[in-house]
Length: 305
Image 1: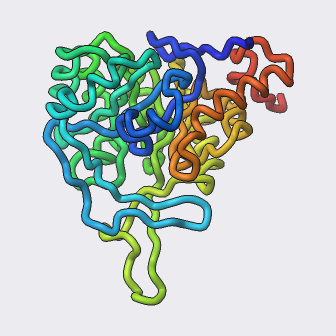
Image 2 (image 1 turned 180 degrees about the horizontal axis):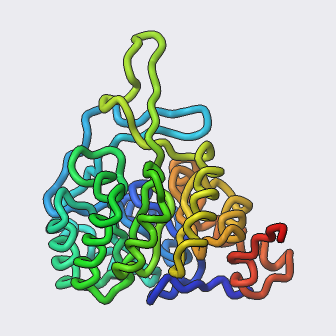
Image 3 (image 1 turned 30 degrees about the horizontal axis):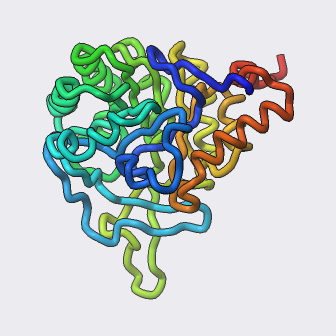
């Protein structure tokens, strides 16, 4: 068996396949379909201090090579998360990373402190990059100083793995990446969705109630690869690649570019078993190419001198 294990800061994963926040519920929804413990880890949907009902419908629109979403970080809130979702997550042996959202900087800290008191998770992913909320979200992740402040305060609240999820909808993703690394982030998730829009040509109305939403799926993979390429050359902490991954070739492409791990998002809606299949496929890829350790792939991109 080939060694697929990777280190994300202080967190060791059995393999580099994780699920992306917002596409995998709280994990339990998929537990009858796949063996969650075969994944490197799962990232929960966002958890905020108070429950959020999210944006009005319609909030999903299919595109020719992906989808637009404007869910608006709908979630049960941290107290119900502790009561209703955490017990199942604590039963897993795979890594559990909680995606954390807040309307204010203080709310990020509050959510982490409440979950820390309950225990049973392996890390946190700070959602400073959601394009579908009016308060917080992408506004936090577009400013290096604010992103760094959130990271620093959250770092003081936990010794667990701390990941910051970056937005591509900024002038310089590298500036944000360096700022959050300096503030104590263990890893960076690159990238969240791109702002996009679709129009119904019959009603002449936007297909989303919020007009714009986050574009994900195969259409953004080349953009995600480019952002990973940029970020890994500007930070020394591990980068988790995200964006349009649909098969094992896509996973390997991100790893070669420099990502230490990947998250599977939109593909979960196409094939709910895809994340577990990708672990198997990656193992087969390594066997076929006589790769004993996944580290032989990571960051192996060949560039002309």
